[in-house]
Image (tube, rainbow, N blue to C red; front, side, top):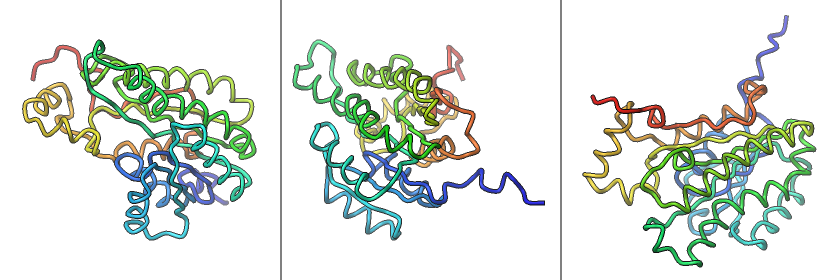
Length: 260
């Protein structure tokens, strides 16, 4: 008798988009999805970074697209590429993000717009643009890469935290609204992960020790830790999971006052 669970742990044949896919969590996610059989388009603003990605990953299933997804033109560019090359879309990983760390009173209106457009509006608009293709899949998956900064206070900038909290709520709303179309929507919320964005602050030894002291796992996470969670959420094995935000945080968000 054939094992009905054989294909529950694979992404073979799936079509996937990873935004912010040239480095950090995005790059790790691209590698993870490819290793599980998916065909992936990695999107990033920096053409040079995408060239380097293709030199690192030798796969006929990897495509790259240079586009600024904080702009309407960049989002339309991606939508046109997908519509031209694929009949349906199975996976959309909204990972693109940025941050400017400073006190709330010091932000300019331009900085506010830049962070909001990059982190939040890009995901909101891409979801809407690509909804028809995700619905055609009948097994569509959206994964938002949020942050523990959207779940609790961390010293990383209020606007960044606002965008991540909004993505968490958008995850809930779309999971309910788009379930009839066969689309599942989930999110992952990382704590400090060894990415280029995080390394700038983790280089400060005092700050690094503060982070470790609040993390029960007593270590900084790796991009692959987040990527594997994203991949799982897109698998048939996770078919009954939607509307959830999973903290990939070494226990940070459940650590009350517990001296060790």
